[in-house]
Image 1 (cartoon, rainbow, N blue to C red):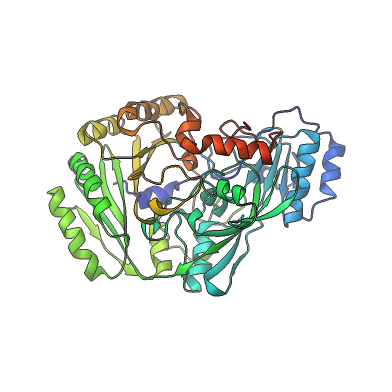
Image 2: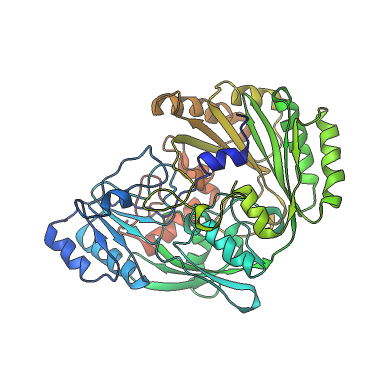
Length: 483
């Protein structure tokens, strides 16, 4: 099978992590303690042996097999407050979970409390382009609700990813060059901080925390319960997918990195590169008649005819279903088939890491040689620039030309061997890419991960952690520690 971003999504999904925590003290989890918490919740509290516990403890990645002491199915914001208060009081590790897509399994925790906000998934489209989205909503239903109301949000392509982790880590995705990161469209959020207080944060209230949650979140500072976004009028889009011969990968990357920044903000594109893959895709805000000459020019630059070329022109919702590889799946079928879900989107087993391309690679051929060493590795390159570069938040890589996501499957390799393979890519690209990485593509072995994920914003984020979570209630291995 020829690999493309869309086929990869259909069989595995593009994952982003959600809010997560790992407490630092020995928990007091006697049965009586859990009974006390259960009395405070409107939703269910599942412990080992309860019906539904086994399904509830699993997330998107089958690689991780955690056994939490309890899973709280929060049905309202007050449930989240009760969980945070309880965990802080008894020194219990906390893992908040929305979509359950954490690359490294941080959305659950052995022996701790999983605060599952999946049922806080309401979506309300208000007047003046505003939309209130519960932290448990997944992208598929978000796109469905917004698209049906004639509105759009710049976000990712995997329908089972949770809105929370995506937004808190920044939110690289489709329409990013036109509208910015997902977090750039955030007007306000409701967040439960380590003291159990639910706060509304915005540019006018707790502005420092609002800044931090837009790109420096992903498990830090608190558990968000809802987001209010400024949406855009949903445009008609022309999606495109061109599959080039595998031997063109070096030329494809070399031409793309020069061509992509010169394109209008209405055009977003990506690459899918591997030992047998040379794929170029994206979308254009406008009709196919305007896109076709742009793509024809790029084909001439590559110097080879694509083996396959698609350019469907649809409305916004149709384009999002196309990118999710869900054009043949109706309704909830384009949803998770794990954790009790009845959808057709499956779980995944792979490891990943990332780098950010801050300037054009000097030697694209050498980069591609490194990327193509292992036949089980695959690289997804998402274009940056445009409105992304004009934003201002804790996301540190505004000036990046692109994000590179390196993925290695586990069908023919152990986890150790796969991590070693992507580690060679990650570290081998250091001279070209520098100490960079995307916090939504966490890698437990990322060297100098604080600098990679948070860059020059790390000191400010650490000061905010001292203010809002001095006792590290929301601590986790790659979280921001108080200064």
